[in-house]
Image 1: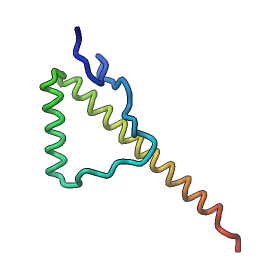
Image 2: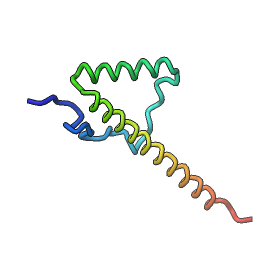
Image 3: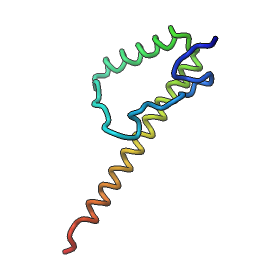
Length: 93
């Protein structure tokens, strides 16, 4: 029986996180570079100790980057829509 987890055999996620793309974004945990490095190392070590190969770890990192990219794109889209709506609601002088 194969390893069970959130990733398929090719390294892609079975399901995206439920908060992605909707609702309120959770507050950032820390902007401290050292804390970020510790979190990344802990996540990496957890993946490796769970049996993930280096190729699978790269696939996880790629998925994370894709999720962040989509989130930023969605945030920019909402900001642009809000700016357009604000401009449309201004009274004409």
